[in-house]
Length: 217
Image (cartoon, rainbow, N blue to C red; front, top):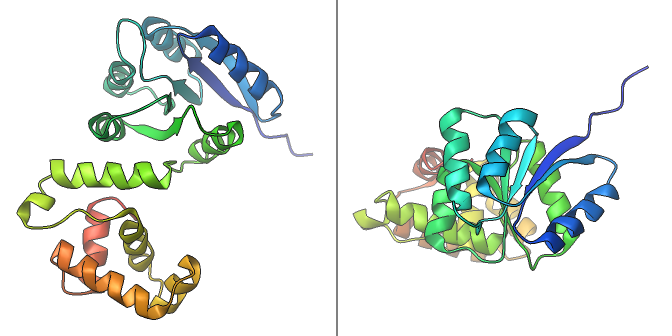
């Protein structure tokens, strides 16, 4: 008889008791999520991750003393296996790009519905990256600019164009992309033409190479 899957073990970090209590109640309703520690600052968070080795750290960006990004940096430096999701009231483009560089696997705004947070946790636990489409566009724009890609004459893509790049790079044809996005094949062709010009590539082969170099596929 097969054993039931182990629950995802969570450590939550936030300096607001109401947030911690609300998250504890939320996770108690989910059979596959187990809250193993609640922390109110960076020091407690790092101690919990080092000793408990949770599957996932749910980390507020704004903490008293050390920032959430410093916690991420320390986790990466020590090679700790815990995956991190940022739960924040707001995040700048620079913070978002830095968080992704430091290994954050998801970003959820506190204004989002609780079920989105639960979905994000499950996706990240399964090895996926979770970003809302608006945040994804901002992150990629920031990475393009910081990596010098846009600086070499290339222009940053919109979130819709980024999505088309990802689909095209995984082998989808124009018709399939059109069906997925509920647009016409002609519109897909226009988007691809604009994408080729912005990225200075000549076709799908170069586009796929570019997407893989950027880690988009």
